[in-house]
Length: 400
Ligand SMILES: NC(=O)c1ccc[n+]([C@@H]2O[C@H](COP(=O)([O-])OP(=O)(O)OC[C@H]3O[C@@H](n4cnc5c(N)ncnc54)[C@H](O)[C@@H]3O)[C@@H](O)[C@H]2O)c1
Ligand SMILES: [Zn+2]
Image (cartoon, rainbow, N blue to C red; front, side, top):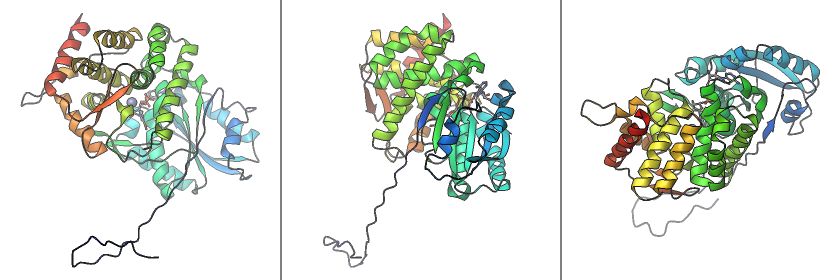
């Protein structure tokens, strides 16, 4: 190999550089389906063998405790499914893990998953099949990505938010150091199976949570989808399954299009367009000790950043009103009293979220804002005074 010559280097110190380059291609299907564990549904067995290996695939099943409780027959159905496909798959173990943010808070549950993988003697070509909400999927995905430097992960997201955002992408994580997703890896899954049948048992909070992510991506990327969400806000609130499935499909595909075609799937740059509203949302989640749901916190963040966008002339009064009306019509919040909380020096505590967001992404602060509806722009600083005005404005409608 010939070193890369540096003819411009006047320094007396020599350096032989051998420039390396490698490309790794990831492929994974995201499938929308129903009744994935019906014994006569071949989908899961086919997915495990999608590389045509024609062998008996070993799999560990991890179930979110909230899903396990809401679907008491699930474990039995999973066992029956493996019995019905004896040639292609073998059930190593089933483990039930805490659901909700507590699952990804600190190392306890992550370690439990790693131990289960080890005790079941799964190898790097074995599968971890994780069934649950976004938090539990983040945590199991993280554990699966570090044991043996990465096992195959199949996600079966069971909330609207996990199906249209959290469970379909390439990231996982856990909360540490008082910050959301402080620890984690980029690790694309082997497959994602979005089974709509799980959604019927969601609480109203977790049913509507995913719609906040849909508003987020529609406002910055897809004006027609934004119209759809505004038109169907009440139907979504009233648990119209057809409207929700359409919302999930469109939102998931917009996220995937960004991840797979946006040019920066592992976020090496400083921009994260899909996190519109999230610098504040993430901060509110931690400030509330995770009593505010991720979707609800995102909705408040979207409301504040949309008002900010109005103040700097990126959207007009009509756009802002439609955003706020759309969010509230489907039962999402645009206010929380934590927005008013101040540190001892008098500054709003939420403002700390800006620096945490910058540090998490690295480089220059980059915040995505709408530029009209369906388009986005990036700004590299946020005026605290205008954020405070946005908060003042939102306190008004919330109080009334
Ligand atoms: N990795 C990513 O790219 C990404 C993206 C967005 C969000 N997230 C993360 O996702 C998390 C939020 O996920 P979420 O909104 O799915 O909530 P969640 O995972 O916190 O789940 C909420 C509750 O619903 C229960 N539950 C799950 N499915 C159920 C079902 N079918 N029936 C009844 N109960 C059920 C859970 O047990 C939990 O109590 C946050 O931690 C967020 O940071 C990750
Ligand atoms: Zn989000």
